[in-house]
Image (cartoon, rainbow, N blue to C red; front, side, top):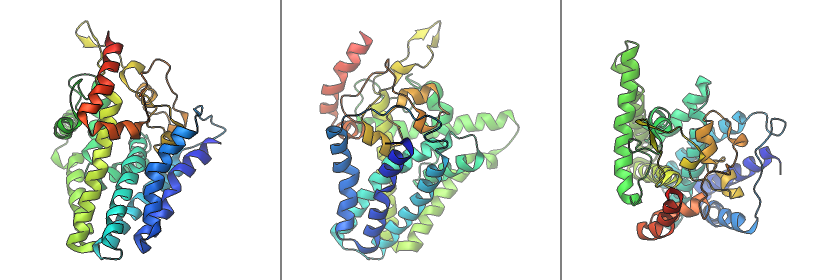
Length: 338
């Protein structure tokens, strides 16, 4: 299947199901939830292919799909808040819609925003930034680019999980450290050019997040605001799960007092085809760190990168249970560092 068709199919098919679920509830909610979870897992397991990276002739630009997904993100989030907040669908359908929407935002919208904040074109970069702001996670825009890519696989990187660190311990540390260190990096950058607080993007992150909270309350009342908060916290958790899984236990050696250059050995890759398409090749993480500006269809699987034993979504689910996670992953880390 050509790259454009594969990525478009995987990411766009859930949208009409989710939109129909927001308007009418019923079977549409459960079909959307089934597609994002069970269908994706089955496709990874039953169809064993590893698509090669796209060539320019297959997918000359990833930007049109990213723009469509970004605009759909805001429509979908607003409709879910309105539908549940105003009682358009029943209780169990509302719960299903929250889970399905949170999964879609966590796996597709987060991956798309990640792609966009690495774009040089300012409008595309801003679009990715506002996706994160709408999820009350705007600071990730700064922390990911200025901190994570520079300090990955070192103790100073908030997003790198240490060996033995459980996910539930990781979350507050990673969130708060990323917020603080991202702010310091932005402030230092502004100090160098003589600009003050009001030029700091953190003002936009905080004010924009408050604006989305107000919009959610206007769209759906108190229940709409609660719905919004649950969905975006759920989406945030999935982003942190991806970071947790993709760098767990991996460290850069110190050479002459400095960390060695980032290499494929500092990220866990996952080769499963369908979840990779759904997440815009985010599981090909080693190549992203080697080439942050490389468009997602062109990302490669690295022979030298460690491989997760299951797909990224499956391993993220396992990470929710730290004893089971450590039983599976700690010995793999030990073999890599032996």
